[in-house]
Image 1 (spheres, helix red, strand yellow):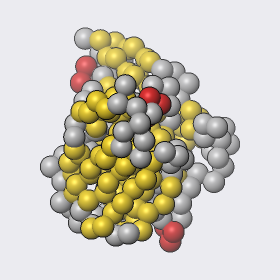
Image 2 (image 1 turned 45 degrees about the vertical axis):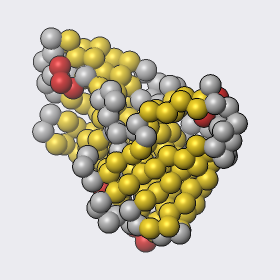
Image 3 (image 1 turned 30 degrees about the vertical axis):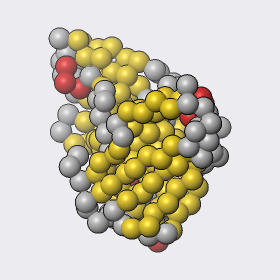
Length: 113
Length: 116
């Protein structure tokens, strides 16, 4: 979707290194979310934001931090990457705060070796 | 614990026939349910939703049924088409509109293959 982009699309990193994934939106939406997708687990919420500098934890937040210094960018940081964080990461945005309005990015495939 | 469960990892149907994807949930506070569709290398896209005040919602070839007493919902696709081959995620939420932050709990997904 042209209104939301994730970068990078693919990344391979070593255990113990910090990694930052970026979600950028051009829709001026208030709500942004980070999910991870893993086989057998579906999509699990990591962190979400309901406004600039307003963030909260999801169900699998350990080992992750986020920042939202401006409306259009929501950053997900792995402070010290571990192999268990190998996954596909999806960002989603919503303008209405309701679920029909979720738009997902194309995902970032992260491999921690 | 998995609050939203899709117990069938995969489903294969013939083109033109009905596809039925199932989803169970455990949290009685869930009041809104959705289905998302995902193609490889793409993000999920919204397909259809249903509020807990309804037991059925229809949109073209797609119908979602909700059985609150059984905490079960299903997605029916009739007729199935090869282009429907994708991963389908069931999702649920327990937010009220006044405190809505839009958090969704997803199931594990079911891979649907529609054979020509």
